[in-house]
Length: 297
Ligand code: NAD
Image 1 (cartoon, rainbow, N blue to C red):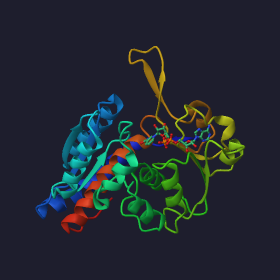
Image 2: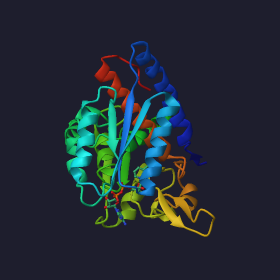
Image 3: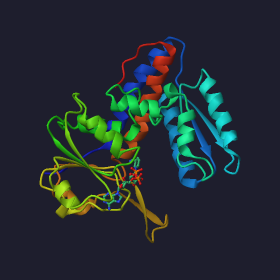
């Protein structure tokens, strides 16, 4: 029997858990604040920042959005970053990726105060994560860990294959899962575009994570019976519906479902968890900056 993982339900549990922490902060006179910064007017990025602002409202985080003209010089963006670094009402913020071509995203990340870097992408935070002393776990990998925990999937001793080595998903997730920790202790194989015999690696997995950005790359023959399959991919595939596209993952749900013991759907799997963990990091940032201890879910 395959169980389908309900990412919306687990994300709701995390959000309910955060409400308690937000109340504790309110009792101490503090309200967590999250800012989103968008340079340019990319429609997909606009959708993402709107969703993040809605999420803030839902749980009682103070949301703020800052737009920067897409044609402006990088300095205009840096001014906003410097102002947010100095703003005591904003405990965490992010600059939506990608920035326009004339702005190097790495320079942007380095300018963000590490203690407000709720995406967890600043080199200091990446270093801390690798050292086993994470300040903020990046939202998607952390969300994957929380999903595994919610469904009692043991990572200790498990063979985990991650397809994709990106800065935001594959690499940090691999680092988290190999750590000597209750939600780590796995043996991790990281695959990428130059991996030879990918199917051999995916078939060897107890837990298989796909974060590739290639629609339905992982299909039934690549998966062994009983595997836990986590599909991070969100890909727009054009179709003739009114919307003009369908969202599909990196896993071919139909052919993999009959083999997997547990599988995430797309949408409704990892996506809602990523959003919930951004709120989590914001509350954590507020707790540290305000000096108010809270219980995090
Ligand atoms: P990316 O483009 O930065 O990295 C993709 C990785 O896949 C690369 O490391 C590349 O080496 C590897 N790859 C590409 N083709 C491959 C192949 N044929 N075989 C093996 N490896 C291959 O991607 P990303 O930012 O990690 O995003 C991956 C997917 O996850 C995208 O669909 C993205 O939209 C989605 N995503 C979803 C969430 C979420 O919240 N659910 C968050 C982030 C990203």
